[in-house]
Image (cartoon, rainbow, N blue to C red; front, side, top):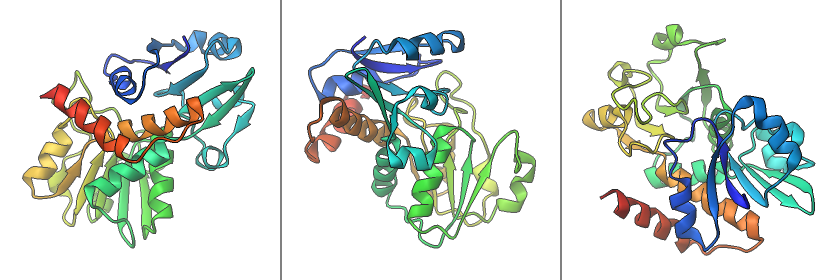
Length: 250
């Protein structure tokens, strides 16, 4: 594998399609079981990879250089092999930022609730804080704030889902019921398969702005390709690739 994606499971991934629209390079989807992650990372048998659930934190110790932003976030989703040294980055930060901009939602002085405790949560919380949120609360199954505590946060302004709940093939599920949120202005769901999750659909039925994760996927992939090849990509590529993927879906 020269370029590709590692994680587990990967049956839902659009990454090969997205990178195919970005440039002419071979990009492989490679499921990695936990017991072989160590051998894979030590072998360094790749030029550049993206990393997704559940390894965005686990891969960090294998990297020789960690970009300051990725280090601050504590999550890596892009690794480039430069002459046998692994350089780690977080392009999800760019992806999430551009997804939020596309939605029209502003975080300044807002109460933000984030669902999930993985690497994408770390990225989202850093973006939200950098953009001036009044408060950022993280809810996860193992706490310290759990789903049993949700009623205390029904006055949140913006809800962000970074969990896989609602992802293909379990498309009839949602991590929370948005009808309970009394002041909700917007929902951001990092899931992109399906394009309209139950969470997004429920929010839109309430007249709440809601954005799926496809633009995040595209934007982080474009940024990753810049790092793979050391060449800047024009801004219009983000929208072009996004539209090409959308057209495939229709």
